[in-house]
Length: 606
Image (cartoon, rainbow, N blue to C red; front, side, top):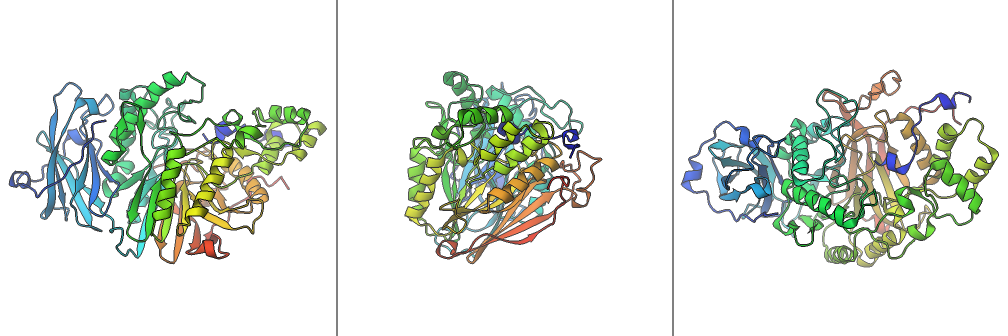
């Protein structure tokens, strides 16, 4: 036991672990002059590739940006408006063009082309490209969805999040394209706002500027990310359904409150800049426009995949109340003495005890208008599955054992002082207050809303936490046998680390706490980067956790980068979860059908 202090265990604070002019294009039959353009070699105007998103039965949003110098404002800042022609076809050779049109793009919008192509055949694979100034983009592949009342037997899609360019390569996207998915859901942290790493993991793999603040800086940062060949490939091959989290603006912001306690009026300027560029860069419909007057973007919306799934994309950042407990870990315990509370807050260096803030009945994550909108959407849904795609974990996650282990491993010498051991023994709850755990009343309103509207088979899809989870959302988390409200599947990150580049010790500490204190959580893995692959039909939902990393090298303690995603890192299945349709009317729970065994990274602990 004397070797505890020799182990390199990171400080386990919550902050460290978790760390306009767009129009509608009504395309018409392709005119002869467009069909005669041919197919020249793509030129330097289209360095950032092409993308599509938000399909409906008869439309899809198409995107590109004219940027010959993408990391320096695009390189066209002083030019006049540029005409861009767009073609949509049934085949990659563009022999059967079904729609074509044009869009003028200007420097004020970063020379972005973001258009809604309408009048398309439903449930179809389509191809598209752009022409401008004598150059032609690469060819994009997209699809439309089945109509709302059309029968859809099956859908396959990927859930992704958190792609910090500093932390690794986007290897997972190459695997996603190989899986032949219908679309990708991105739950946020598409970019990160911070500066470059102290030491890049590979030459050139790091942010190329300090922390970003202005419109041009946000444009350049998105350009850096879009230059990644695997991300660019995924956008060209598959439509994306996107929502944001915090790093698209600033870490852990809440509404107009940033993490540094800045004047909200000052932070509003930065948030407006970030929202404007997010709106420019993502394939979003015109109704999701950036509104200069109030600096907002209504990003919550519903997309329908036939009669199989209604996908409700939520926003838990723009309208949320500020986090309780000074945005650290938080506890609702009220049986400890003031002395015990002071001891524990000293141990964890957190404003830990904030029962009033965590239980505040007025606190919100969605805002009243979005809550009402979601209630209407759930009530009127006729789909077999109702998907709530959002940012932060909805399940209760009590870190009690994890917190005790961290104190045992890294805060005090062995043995712990008696007064610390006594205080730790009295502690009952430790929560991550940036997630739904910090907004208990808001989560109860969400659960009550699901109960009242009774949608078919509600499933929550989540990102944010850089690790993989599956959880049964219960009416009473203290009673494992209580009624199930919904299932939740949390995808790990594309690249962002689980606290450190080598997450093995962190994974072990969290894993032990998950098992000891959270029986409703079916699965957890913090080792691998990757994504969640979802296969859904009328009888069941199956989530396959695809992991980027060499499973055979988990025991190699000589290489601290063994779990960093590099370009040649293999991708394999780590676990498979299944949830039967009709679970709300039965005793069904999420079931593990496959999970790879993992080594014990802290064998000296009991």
